Image (cartoon, rainbow, N blue to C red; front, side):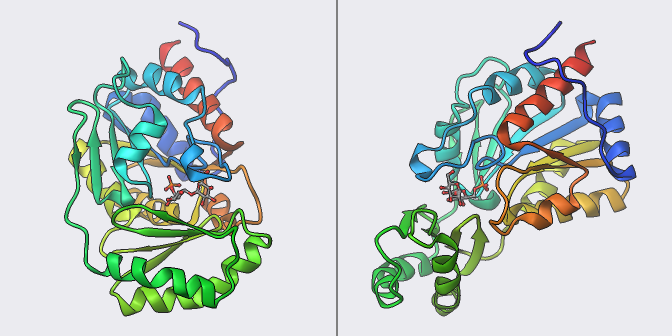
Length: 286
Ligand SMILES: O=P(O)(O)OC[C@H]1O[C@H](O[C@H]2O[C@H](CO)[C@@H](O)[C@H](O)[C@H]2O)[C@H](O)[C@@H](O)[C@@H]1O
């Protein structure tokens, strides 16, 4: 059975990555494949509300899902937003998919369409109330905008006149604001996100791998928040569970270069991720 794009499966550049991919291909029904959303399944765009999965992503995931143990999305987005913007609901093939949102605190299950989310800590409302005056005081400018994620507040500078300069200028005051209210700052691609502590993509990935009983894991990401998931895969590998680290490298100069350095496989942004998913499907159905 052929799938769109018949490129052959790339070879990981590291021995651990080659071992991880070999294990995935030998026992696909025991493999967990976990994907970040923005920058990995969804191309980076100036307005987060307009971000959608790459047109090839859902069809590619739906073809691969029945061949592997499990497929999940692990994202900084609220779980419901990623499920909606990704178009993951009611897709034949993706009935078992889960979206772990807000760095793993929230969970959306395709099987039920329901979202589980704990209560929002009080510090989030306090930050929300103080933020406009802080941005004004720091001269953030009209291009700087705030994304209210419910249990986190993201300050974006991509649309500012000087995106990197504004990001750097806001860094210290936002860290201080977060600390005053018991939150942490999660830096990303031209975004500083103020969110509750206690969970990150590493903890979430490790929990998901254990819960799904996976014997191998593939994790694909593009941003600083994905480093924790990379570290978790490193620890799982050290404990004998093979894994592959994929970097979706679409933009440079946005602070996430470390990810490409640590990856076993670097692909060309979301379109490269789709090609990789398709080549896995092709290999498993040959
Ligand atoms: O964990 P992720 O799925 O990678 O989410 C991380 C953050 O992604 C979003 O921001 C990024 O994508 C936007 C849309 O392409 C882009 O405009 C922005 O510059 C990027 O930083 C999202 O808006 C955040 O809430 C996520 O935490």
